[in-house]
Length: 207
Image (cartoon, rainbow, N blue to C red):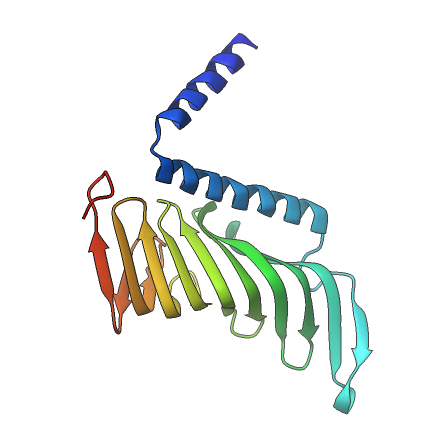
């Protein structure tokens, strides 16, 4: 118990010593982690095995409506991604899941490398492609954050593409805007394209 109290005090002192922006970023990422944990625990449902309510549509197309949808991909013991949607539907004919109020993670070496949230997302079961639409926000492992209109993930070995009103922030060091952004397959680097602006700051936030 004594060691626990000492560790808590040590982390609290370290938190207090951070500047305001770093504390804000830390609180933001911890909030996303908390929401993710709550979402996955409460959902208890995995892709293609969630409670399905099949509704006949035009041309006998079946549309699966569901609440609390989780989609994951794991191969050879390695997890590549997990997505949670509050609500959504799954079209058997098109093999596409459409999710609303989406949060999730992308993994590298079975560790979270990039977290995201978005108001809407789709998963194409045939191609394995994930697309996030509208108010998309992601955070990389080094606390670099990115806002964009649309984000497309096509595989762990391919670049993740951000398209439309891209804004990238890295702590107090940099803020960049662009029409397009590309995140490396390892989620460690990014590049921007199209009409771009970049502002660099010193550690105190001054240009």
